[in-house]
Amino acid sequence: MPRRASKTEAGMPKTRYLIIGNSAGGIGAAEAIRQLDSEGSLTIISDEPYLTYSRPLISEYLAGECSLDSMLYRRPDFYARNRIQTILGRKAIGIDFAGKLVELDDGGRIAWQKLLLATGGTPIAPPVKGVDKGGVFTFTTIDDAERIRKAISPASTAVVIGGGLIGMSVTRPLVKCGVTVIMVELLDRVLSTMLDAQGSRLAEAELQRNGVTLITGQTISEIVGRPEDEGQVGGVILDDGRRLPCDLVVFAIGVRPRLELVAGSAVATNRGIIVDRRMATSVRDVYACGDVAEAFDFVHKGNRVIPVWPNAYLGGRIAGQNMAGLASKHTGGTAMNSLNCFGLSIVSAGMMDPPDDPTYEVLSTGPSAASYRKIVLKNNRVVGMIFIGEIERSGVVFGLMKDGINVGSFKESLLARDFGLSYFPDHLRRERLGAPPPAATLVAAAAAGAEETVMAE
Image 1 (tube, rainbow, N blue to C red):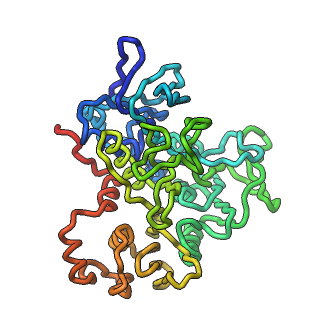
Image 2 (image 1 turned 60 degrees about the horizontal axis):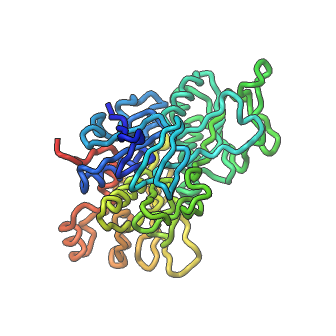
């Protein structure tokens, strides 16, 4: 089992490296630190009581397709092997940045020399009337999935608020469990930040084929109770006045960066905590990564919040390297998402709909009933892509996008079903064959759960 933080003679735990957050970013940082410093004390704090697990798998957990043990992001002995002290099930409630102290919800305090904020995001739940009733849920953690699982039956009806990635992720397991699902999306189409209009139509058709009722251009104005129990969800009222009977409501609108620990401090924020290319904040010895941070986006050429699992892991590694004394610069991430919508595979990254500008070019095929591929170029460099149905070549295209390769001489081949190295110019093919795996490949492997050997067994 993970070890608890030890106390100093003065009674206050002290650590060289303190990480608040036990998900992808925190683990990436811990691994990077241990590759460079095998002795410096390292502590991870998490308000969840679990060993690190893969959050993208909570959909499968709700569907009964995997257990908690199979969701673990690293083996149970990961912390002990890497000499990581853990404080699980405890929440950091305050930080004294000048004194380098973190206060916990049990009254304890921890002193640190280097701090990483990998606190993630908070689910967005609008303050509509009735939001405090029993049967209202969010969907970002194992505990969320467990609470929903206990609340549903094959006779249940659920209203899912939000047609984005989280909404899709909770809808599939609900349907598998026999729940009738009504999806309510404020915008005029689903997955609007992940797909263009054509891609959204394919996803919507797949939802409807699987029995999901889709209502767009609406949100809820009130959650109402049951006639026999006003404190329990009995239905929702839409903006247009329609009343939808239901047994549970799931808010799947998205997440916002958790900024409460830096509120009123010298740590600069915008939508998230602003970091430089070293993942360092405006306060010395304090770093941030993952959903809480605004990091460099190589497509948009500026800092943005990019709440994507692989980006969190890579940002954590860069932060960890710099915390341990190795000057390391983040090359940047971008919004890359993958989704299985009732068997329809979807991958997208970067810019979906380019501006009306002659420096941009759009290549596309379809869409057909189950296949669509689109690539956005700017000055012959890939800046966006959508692959639906046939996604096998999406990784190769993303590699070209990440590395800023000029594809002008072979752009007509980018949408070929068998696109690969054989289509590259000779010099580029030799370069790619001789190069180590791109960072995107390594991060994807890590995000899928392939553990790195950080320390000798």
